[in-house]
Length: 209
Image 1 (tube, rainbow, N blue to C red):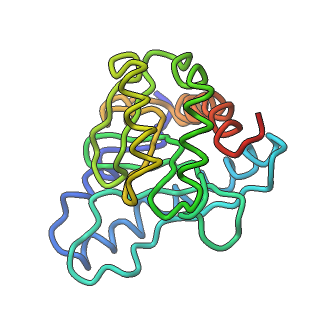
Image 2 (cartoon, one colour):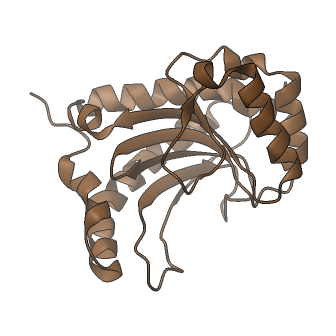
């Protein structure tokens, strides 16, 4: 069988004891893969025609005690920083991989973003059935859109507009077993398909449509 892009050791990084040991494993095992994905998908997102996108591999540089429980490469139309902008992420927890579009608490336009998505809620409800939403990027859990329903989406978006720490994430999760059993080609196709499904949501978020 052709080599997979991810392996069990990648996911097991997040159970290594100690900040120094976990960071060393993260830097040697996972970050080179994030760099590869960064180059490929920054180009793919830039071809969408809204802006030029740049990759940002999470460095966790401010951590002094607690080791990271997840990590990612983010994509945003800015060379320096991405957290204040709507951005895409490809990343890992110990249990699963995620590919998401994120509006996190640093974004200064959360009210406008929430209002735009509320007006065009169908851009979320028409996503395929395995797409999920979350209101907190620091937690691994997320709920399927079709299970949350229109009322649940509206509640998340209302909270995004009113609560300072509120966030909105939408995308797909892939269990670690599924990820390690995908060939590299299969994973890259999965990631590209996911991002392409999220681009219309991004267009609403930035006010393009």
